[in-house]
Length: 528
Image (cartoon, rainbow, N blue to C red; front, side, top):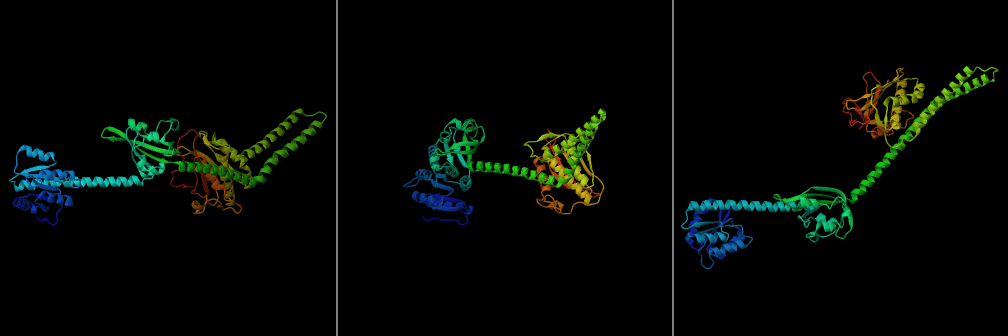
């Protein structure tokens, strides 16, 4: 008998009966249901059509010559290609034993002859829908497994699936590459015995053991793992428990070789140390440059007490050569010599402190004392520029945590620039140095000049290395100031006062405080 196909059908139904009249009735019953209908009049034909077309539903007559419906069903269920087909038995036998036998062989349903059209249509529709859904679910599962395999195969980190005893049940290709061993050779090995020889290598406990046995999530870095050839390497791993319902079934371990990463970290740390050393060298060079510029004024500053000491000494000698020396006046003269020597010593001390390289680490500093010391140091430039310095610091200003030499270098640089800018503009107003608290809880030091102000492109250029507006400047002052302040955990920037000139400022963290010194003032031009 030939195969009959209904066009544009999605569901395939195979009709199997040795009676042509029964086949005709079934066909007429289902032809308008938009099914793809296949017809077979004996068992072998039915098996052949089922293997080639995998029908969703098979209406199968039990009583057929040569091969009855039970045998056909049994062979259909034994074949993976047709095992999921819904077999609905057709039989005039309505006894319980016949139905039980059919279900035991894998049958899905049972229709007694003579059958009713509506019953056949309803049962075929129900089983076709169930089989289609099952097949779609199986296809989706296969797709998900394929996607999962592609994802796992594309991940550069090694992945193991372990059972509760630590036996490797799954390994991705990356794990094989890291371990220098084929995937098939890893499967079945014990994770702990393969990759860790002694507890010395894992002082915190064998990785993933607590995950496998107790469901504890683990994450460790820089542990030593062994490859298949027993060579070791530093690794980082994460392990998460694997559950089947509520039952712990082992762990999933994700790991990677961090040899190159650790080498990069060491190289980066060395580079940081080198940059820090170069920063200190540049700052020291900047201080030497500053002292070179201030040399004439400093020499004059030191010469004054030395000259006074010389004059007072001559006076003392003359007084001592008298027949009746005035001891009171002599004592007063010697006191003046001592005072002038202290003055000269203080000038030398201040210069030496400013010139030396700062010790590593920060100190708790009084802002008022630090700025007063800086102001006295800057008096040389104030006289050279025919200017003055006005210092205003609140008494209740908290101490800061910073490097005193570096902070003084920044403050001195800003004050000297302000003195020069004020003189260039022909102003007689003093440079204003002040300090206060920001709304972020940091100390802010400001230096205000009365010069001609800053150019419009100052934001873009002012803190760039080697950019300068001075004829003989090197352009390392403000960039060095930025570097030094950032090293203290603060920021540096400038503002344009409405009445002219410029206001430079820098912020520093309060000693013992946790506030951030990052500024959020929208009207402030700051250095990134």
